[in-house]
Length: 460
Image (cartoon, rainbow, N blue to C red; front, side, top):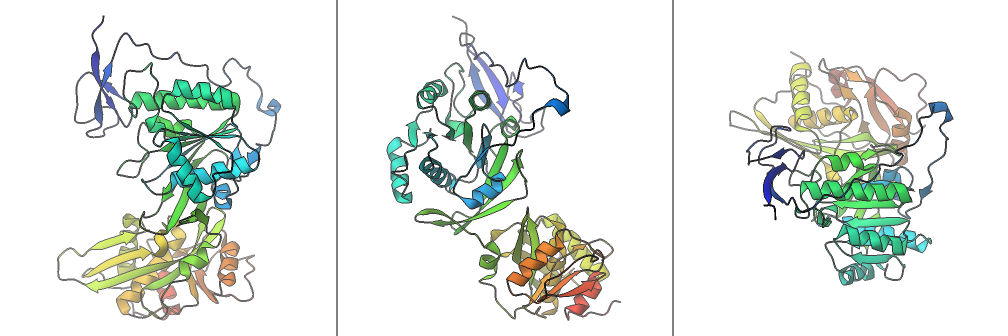
């Protein structure tokens, strides 16, 4: 009998080394090489033929132009993030912190699809069938008719798939699945890679739509090799505080739709409840008449989203003032603080600056720059911004305010929520037809914008 061999495999990139190394030579990550035992007597599973292998090459014009059939999940916010529904034969990876609501949402998805006549198989490697039944009872989905399987051996799961013949399948989670042909433990790089490849081949060949639940690391990324994210058709991330009430669902990758869409849910005792009007919800608790608050109109995919940007500027005696942000990238905040000091003469070098986006939303597009600058200036001068203002525009290094896209859609959302005045870039307004209730106030640079808002400071 041949001796077992010990190797060290990087959990980030899959690099294999004969001995332990502190830093992976391939990807440069530290402390990611894990010990695995490889037995020569155990043969690796023979790789299956990739979908489409052996097919003839065709000119692009002769490829059939067939629309992708989609299944309605019964959850409008999930449909939005997926690009309109579940595509036949697609593979979707859902990640998020423990307890964020991944299993709850996928149980509701299974129940809705089963109620429409779609055969769904829910495979769990972390919970027993009885535990899944208890969650289904809490969600009112115990009579929906979807199939439940508690198993971690992928070869046995493939046999059950042939018996049930589902159209949609949920794997909760991919890190618990294993192939007995591999000597490594479940969750290792080799197991995750091989199991995901087997499931992908099964999905593409049989047309089964698969939802994979993925564990996340402490940094918030999907655990395991990055090849897992490259294999799947869509990667969805759940965001939000476990102790909080609201959850945000974003698409980090989507081959069948936009990656900028946002779905919002409220965690209740009966499961995930959709929030169809997130702008009104995010602004419902804002305090009027306080300095350091500004409303921003951002775009999340095709949906305009109105959020409140809050800033607090306080004097400090330490040599290095604090700069903290939540919902805005810290590097972007530091850039805007430099522009405020240089172009608008707002003294901040001896002030602590804290910026927060209410509701736990992350603003990534540059249209939020003007609202961040205005909120900081408002707090620094202790001058409130009137409650009927909405601010949007990108701020450049020379203090100019640059044009933003989807302007009419943002203005219509402002009018729908009762706002009367919008501060926006001076350029790019030709052809824009604002709602009758909205008054536009264009500004060419940051100093002009602060003058329009009443936050006046003479440039030195």
